[in-house]
Length: 373
Image 1: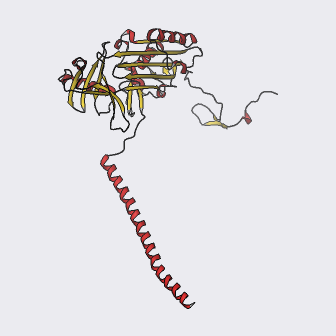
Image 2: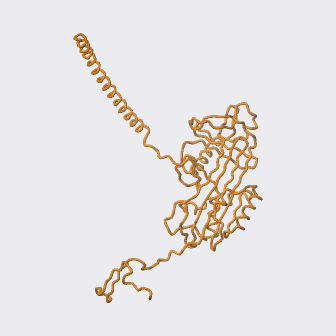
Image 3: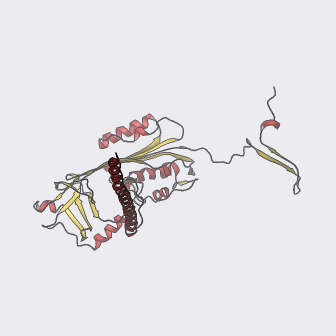
């Protein structure tokens, strides 16, 4: 028994240092982990300082009301169709540039410039109509756009077609179906803007016929990240592609491209030149709440709904655009001031130029005349 106790004591004596060592090791590991976390945080702060302040990311796509509009969206699209509707709003409904009784949005001021009009389009490219809201007007628009473009509206069903006095709808559709002078090649999949997700491309490779190269006009070429070309179509329309990392309003990018082109060498693709562009295919609708619910001067009309829809496709064959816009308006309630004492109020009686001789504050109906019983 004594031997057993002696052996047990010896084992306990050996376990105690091992336990202390294990505790010390765990403590050292914990300190090491804390140091690594602190180092990671410091590294992240340093990297953030080197990259500059974080930029607020906007929505994936924004349909702009004008080419001058500013947006934070990663992808920005514009068509002239909403401007056509706005021009009719000025001419047919408000009879002057739109100014609101409430705070004037920048969008309205830009649209009032009328930077785009039917003069910038051939007659066969657009249809527009306006009138008192009724099922008959809706049917007329649907029949006309089918007859002219063989298209159905994407937005008319979203509007209220219940007739009412001074309730109008202004509508326009713009369609272009372009075919390149020469068909390009399908170049398969590739990365865009460094993304891991691959997209489909079309373009020209070195072995293609010279006639295909003659369908691509070079506006200018400064380097691999600053150049522009023009794809020519059988319809005579031009499709300009401008490679730039600058994020500016579309109107400024267009002006910038034209200025660089004026200084460029021009010409066509040479035998060793290559061309590659991603295929596009998107459909999007957008409303403009900054224009809605406000009273126009002097017509007193209110924009109930302002909507634009754009579908655009571009591939090795050509490009197709279907854009439409509509604005619904009704006559607003007069903004004349209402002097209604229908809540708590005060009364003061005085002789002109003297102090009041009677005053009262009324906050409930206790002293008010009641209907005779």
